[in-house]
Length: 66
View 1 (cartoon, rainbow, N blue to C red):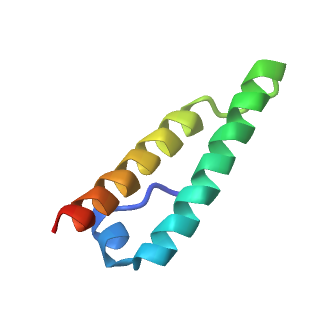
View 2 (view 1 turned 45 degrees about the horizontal axis):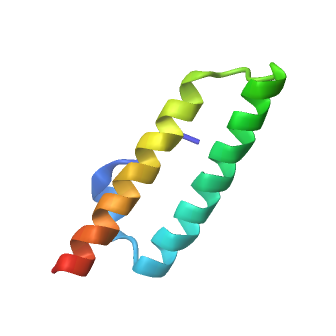
């Protein structure tokens, strides 16, 4: 899964963002489990996932304020 641009995230609806957020959090959990067991192949992926979660949360909070 490639990095998503902010422009693409802003075009999504709130429902799509919440589904995507849930999926990313699940992926982050799986990556943490892989890291704990020593099976993590791409350590940079966890950083990418964390940043995408932050992007989505930022956009959702911006929409709430507006």
